[in-house]
Image 1 (tube, helix red, strand yellow):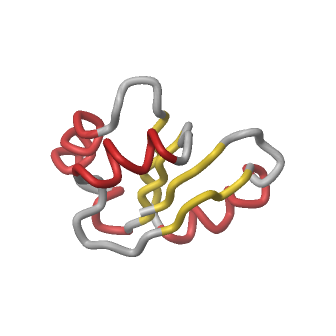
Image 2: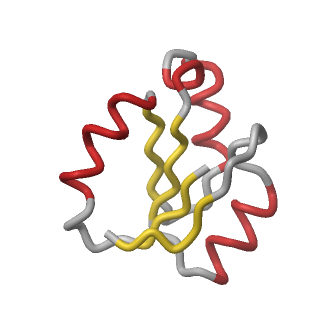
Image 3: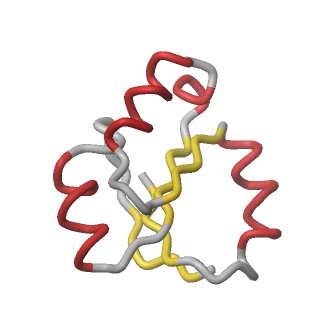
Length: 82
């Protein structure tokens, strides 16, 4: 997995990430790493709606993201992390 962009932003997925970055950087997955959001079904639903078609979305708590990183680093994907 190649991380092509990383952004720390309380807005998580918004117009700039959803429309500009995914196109310009050929993003195939957006990762939202946030303990509170990962437990909130309403916020997760909103993020899914904001994710552009054809782009995968991962919403994970911090500890799980750290654990999963080792298995993801060998995947072929361009990732934007919010």
